[in-house]
Length: 401
Image (tube, rainbow, N blue to C red):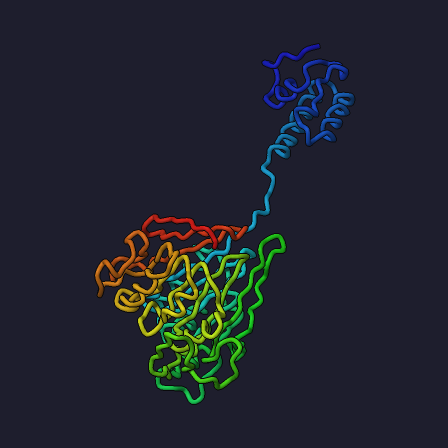
């Protein structure tokens, strides 16, 4: 017999479309319609044998809908994530948030004291990056624009591990004791002191390129030097030192983050003389892809010897409207052969347009701003990376060198 579909429910009509004859011998290879559910098709046959036609239709209709749902459901994928770096605007301070392909997070510095910068970092971490905690936190040095936000930040998002270049004793005039004490309290006195050559172990996926973070300088010592090494060490034909820097800037933690062939250098607020020792007599950093300009782009840092040795393809300046991004540094960056772009967190309102990058590459144009950020994402195969400025709708993709 054949079924009159007008007299049956929608479920039964689904089944009648599938079973168009009363004899099992006239099945038209249901497995071809549902290639992944042969066991279910066999079960459909058993149902027809055991029930009256209309009851069988109802049961098979439900089973078919379930089997179609199973077969047609998009298969879950385990797409590897990108390596993401967020340059958070702290208006002349520093806060660089790194999220690894495994979802592990590393925050470098926490901006200025108060709620503003801590709030911006927390929003970037939780609302943009989707983090529930900060796994690793590095204070590159003890100045207020780098460590000032850590205490209020921990009230907004948890921080698991703390790293720094070591305490100062006695505390020098350029370091605020109350900020060091606040850091000691939130870290519960369990921070790790980093030395040149140390590595912070980050989770990695064996299916992806290797991920590595290595410290190249800390507490005034660069990789390969002994404690107490002098800050000024003549080296090279064009060696031109600056007066010795006794501030905590020269003790900044500097590191190289590599993901496959992609390389990112963050030197905190390292200054001229220590920068020179990173590349002479030996280039300890090597050519890189992305350079976060040292010391917010101030001219007492960003030694041309360092910048030329790094030979970055891209530079990002975490300056404020009236701090950093200075003309000599900007000229040094523009003079790097092969440099493809410069991005800034702020337009420098003290200089001319010639000393600022293209407006499309500036996150914040006005001194009074919302604290817009810049994001960099390295593809899972570490062959390309994309830099976006959400406030401008700018997105540019570059090849890893």
